[in-house]
Image 1: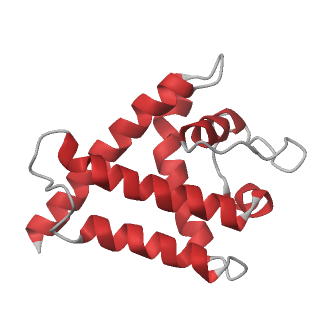
Image 2: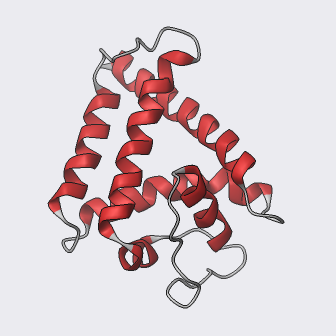
Length: 146
C-alpha cells in the first residue's frame, strides 16, 4: 500500500511539473509565475468540484473515475519506472479526462467551480486545447492574494 501511495505522489508531482511546462509555454502575456504554478492544484480542485456537483452529467464523473483508477493502478500502458515517458500515459489520461469534463460540463459549471485566476484558466484551456474560455462576465476574478 505504501508503494502505491508513493507512486501516486510521484505521478502527481511529475504531472504537475509537466503541466507547468506546458502552461508556461501557453501562458497569457503578463501572467505571473505564481499563476502558472497554481494551475494544477486549481485544475484538481475543479475536477473534484465537477465530480461532486449533482448537476454534472454522469459521463463527466465516469471520465474522472477512469483517470483516477488508471493513475492509481500499478500496471499502465507505459510502465512508470521508465524515466520521463513512463508518466506520459498518466498525464495524457488526466488531460483527456479533464478536457472532456470541462467540455461536457460547460462554461457555467467551470465558472461556478474555478477558484484560480482568469489568466490561469485561460492557460489551462489552451493547454487542454479548448477554445471557449468563460467570459469575464460569467467568471469573476478572485481578490488579489486569494
